[in-house]
Image (cartoon, rainbow, N blue to C red; front, side, top):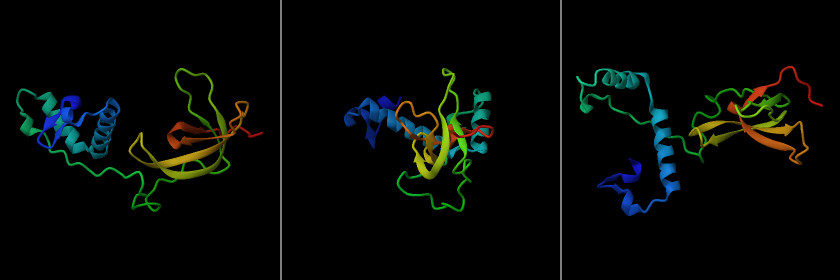
Length: 157
């Protein structure tokens, strides 16, 4: 639908958008929707879905869009209303296992920083990890908090 969108303010055909630009637009629209979701709106939409023959499009709850966070400006609430980092410097961690892998990298947290996670459309903690296995010649890597788990039992050599 986005690839054929046309109204007085925007005509995809005249814009000559590339596939990657369409994908970026779709991603931003999905992020905008996710940031703006609330229970009242979802309940209203579910009510329309369950009673489709009794309702019209005009009966759908209004979608109040919240502003997306900007990737180059720290949130105004930083650092006072920022989530507490889950991992501390010196903590042993490993990447979560993916369903198609039997092993994962592990290491020690040597630093953390607050960065814009474009895949989530928000600011989150990111960690610098000193890798335990350096056979690949790579000694450190970064990871988002959601991709790591603590190795409470492990010891770093």
